[in-house]
Length: 356
Image (cartoon, rainbow, N blue to C red; front, side, top):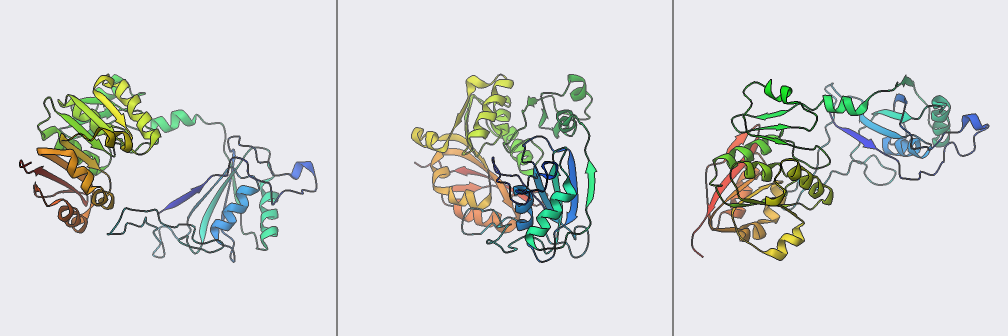
């Protein structure tokens, strides 16, 4: 089942409740935390995203859409678009203006409103403006909750068998020690907007490959580094230095925090692609856990970054077909090991020819 979440712009213009009959009926646009949830089906005759936009402009703090047929034979999955001849791109979930696009024929709508809003009146006004019938509405009041504690409670330490234990700052030593078959090698990560907490199969395969790689005293290039988890693992396994390259500035900042948390800042460089390109160095070991289309697009650059006789580790590759495409792109000048697979994801490892 897929779920689409919308948040309002910073200053949403009031529309459906712009001229209420009394001050008490006004739909506020305050950014305060939502304490009321309204659940209903998207109205027939109006696209789900248009209905969501209407609710947001009327003062909803957020609106989420999910397939009303989820869990039935009529469920319709929505996927990202990953063309074989180029980098991946997001699926057009909203489609063209006024159309259904990639949204579902009927959506389950959950709209959040701050306390004090007359939600039913607000929804009725939205339906009246759109010229649609308002269906059954289920209201739920959300009491005060410690969201930070609840989110932290949902993140358990991650065990990468025979490889690495990943903990988060709020985990006690006792919690980590109680884990069964947890490797002694441990790093601490601050989860944030960056990809890479160690749970995904591709991260785990790359980590296992790094454990077996000739890292002693080597410098690693981690291209598409996300949280920096693979760079930190390599440093823990014996690398002398790690260069983490990431296009997302927030992810770079998080990776630097993670390096500091683990006492590795002096051996860790977080760079943008432009800053790394200015260096133009070649490395004895390069790892890139991205997506197949992006790996193919980056082939000329990544091949230049592998020193003669060096190793390259590639993942983020789904299935045998994508693995074959990546192998074809990187085949010249490299000798690859047989692909490894976990849960349908592929890991490729190759050695560059020693010839200059």
